[in-house]
Length: 115
Image (cartoon, rainbow, N blue to C red; front, side, top):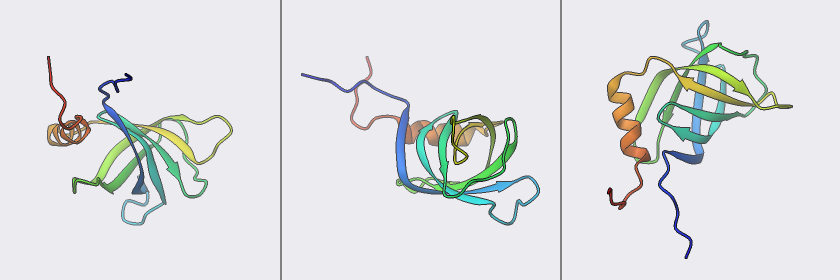
């Protein structure tokens, strides 16, 4: 029987993310969906093409299905999908310990046993 391995990433296409650039911290620059979420970053698909480059810093706001809220979470663009101007890899820069704990709690598979 196939057994799913424990993972520290999850797909959340239904979670909407508001993205703010450094210059527009009070006005959303774009909206998108989380395609893959981990403790240290995410794969994000934007609704529209945006002008961001490698190493640009952005601020994200989103609410996970369990109610965990992240407001103005700082991230850095670390990759862009080849041939796409809407899919980016973001690294969470300088995370507060509470954010790390909150994300770890959400990403830990429910009902798994640790050996």
